Length: 559
Image (cartoon, rainbow, N blue to C red; front, side, top):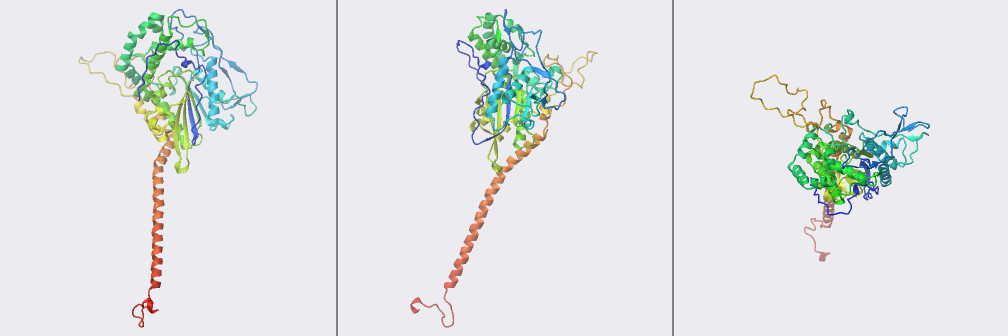
């Protein structure tokens, strides 16, 4: 995996506001390649602009108030299989009260520009993928789509906003007032869910916990933290105080970069300076100069990319999601009936955007902006025995396929066998995700004592040393979801059949070529044999008749 080089920021008049996505440009996919047919697309998005995700201020005497006008609407449809909302149905608008943030926002709530940027992305996608998507949204066309979000309100709303932008005038097919589209989700872990692969999860793949700790405790990470603590941190404390250090929700031992004070400070800073996050009444203190602000942006991005560039974190954190995507790509290639053509995965910056790019070595070292969009497109060229497939990767309007090391020599379209090989190397199996068995405690030289016994064997995940506060103790891990099984679903079976077909294809072509030349050779031999027969026949007709009267041939002069 190619390491990212973070160049320290030069003197700047204003910090970069690319994070804010003020021009709503992240969904503008470039023109599709000529001579190729789009067969399937996976769209991974970060939610749109939102209020701060934590209510603890990063500096003292902050007077900013945040304004949220985008709210969720919900209601009852009468039966679980209804596809339209009947006329006259009552809907309810969700309004937050007793907010922990100053103003009208709940922590992390999607704001109106956040909805608008996702809606704009949906309009761009509908126009660009018109050859793949149905013109209208009706009952039959809904099988084209698979929409999924993690179980947080801002990602559910962002996914809904994007899809609404694709079909802004969707009419209910049976005269209802609105079309109902399923949005799949998995119950949040905080509510007892089994874990969602959209975000890296130690519940989905327990080995991720150890990978996080190894990455955060690596020599490079410790040295970077030491250098930052000796240079940038003191200057920030002198400028804005140490409130941001005390407010950061650090967890883990060692503390993980994913919850470092710099990332908390980045969140609070961008919520104040982004024009896409409506607020009033305050901004960063004057002592928090643009140069310091840019250094915070760069340092937070460096910490996160360093974490997800780690090969174990990539495999155990992003591999489960890659496995699910591979299944659907295989099914589309094998033309399995019912396979969706458009898959939407709505999540966050660190899942599924930044971590996915890092796993494939296709990142840019910058923090993913609000509304970031990553499109993984499957193309087909040719037909019959000459049917080939390729992948194009687009991130925020830029084709980044060539950033994948093994795809760099192939331009914007990476041959499917190469991409599949790279992706498959990231997918862990069940035993990998279970992690190594706990290390037994060394035997004590003293006689046994009535002290508390070691953890019972029914909890093998409990370490012999005092448990870390992260991850919290959990019940025995349930069976892993299907993507970790060797042959979990019809999609995986279809993928195997496609792999066999691709392996046989060159052999079939070679046999065809050899057969052709063998036929040509046989025809040539037959032609030469016929010519020889004719020559012998003509020669026999030209020989003189030998009789008793003419024992030898006559000379032509005697005729």
